[in-house]
Length: 107
Image (cartoon, rainbow, N blue to C red; front, side, top):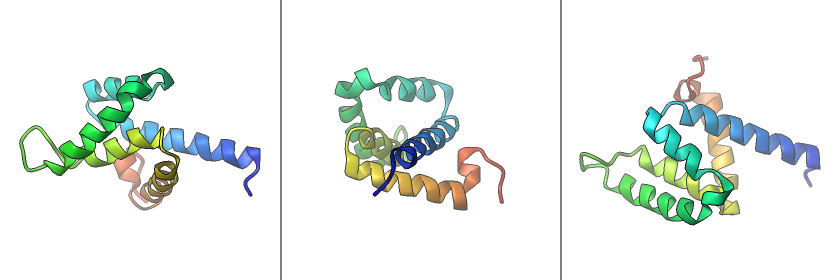
């Protein structure tokens, strides 16, 4: 069983890692993601997450790209606890194995 301190630390680590990834996006998309991640934007965040996942599946088209898949999952994970656990593990893996994806120096 996790203590309150461990839960708070996990949440802090998650937010830090997400912010590092968001900083790698183009400025306009960064602003949109910050707006979507606000608690009041839940009614928009859920459909946007689904849209990004579907757009990622259409990566062969010019406007869409594979980058949309993880962004959609991250947006949905703010509201879907099982996805949150999966994304926490994925974010920790990315930070450990591919830090340059987050703009961190390579190991």
